[in-house]
Image (tube, rainbow, N blue to C red; front, side):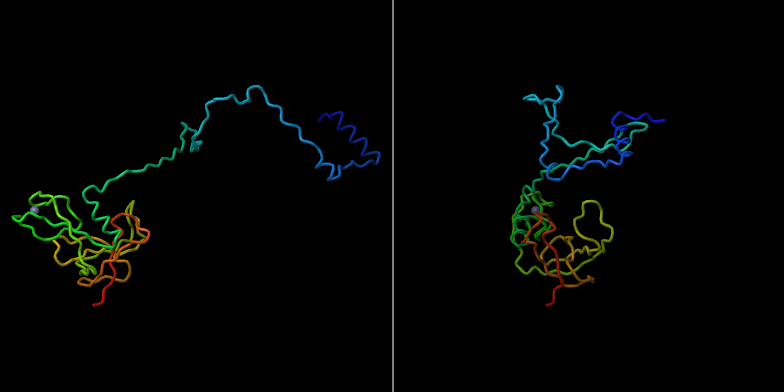
Length: 209
Ligand SMILES: [Zn+2]
C-alpha cells in the first residue's frame, strides 16, 4: 500500500467533508512574482571561461563501439591560372580559344578547351575570341540519365560533342533543350546572368539557318 503524505491526507479529508479545492483566479496567478532561480556554486559562470563553440555530434551507435556522425565541409580554392581568359570570356558571352603563335608549328587551328601551351610544340598559346554567333554541328551525342557525383545538371540531359569550324578539337558540352541528331546545327549560348563561373556557362541550342 502506498503511504499517503500529510498533505494528501488533509486533501482527502477535506473532500470527504464536501469542501472543494479553492482555485486561484487568473489575475492573481499573473501577479505571482517568479523567484529568481538559485544558482548552485558549480553553475556560476566565471569570466574568461573556455566555451565549446562547435556543434554537438550525433551518436549513430553505441555497440559494440560508439560511432558518431561528424559532418565535414571544405572549400576547395582552385585557380584557372593561364586558362582564366576562357572563363572571363564565358562571363562576357564569348567563346575564347587558343592558337599556337609559332609559325613553324604543324597545328594552325584553334583549341577548345583552351591550352596554356601548344600540345605540339609547347609554345605559350595566344587567345582569340570566336565571332558570335558560334554555330557548330553535332558530331556525336549521348543521353546522361544517371549522372556521376558532382554533375550539376538535372538529368536526363543530352551531352553533345560539337564540331566548330576552324577548331582542332571537338569540344564536349550539353544541349539546353531539344533532341540531338548527328549533323544537327547548334548555336552556342552563354549563362551571363547568374553565371556558375564553370565550363557549364556555355551550352548549345538548336539552330535554324
Ligand atoms: Zn605549336
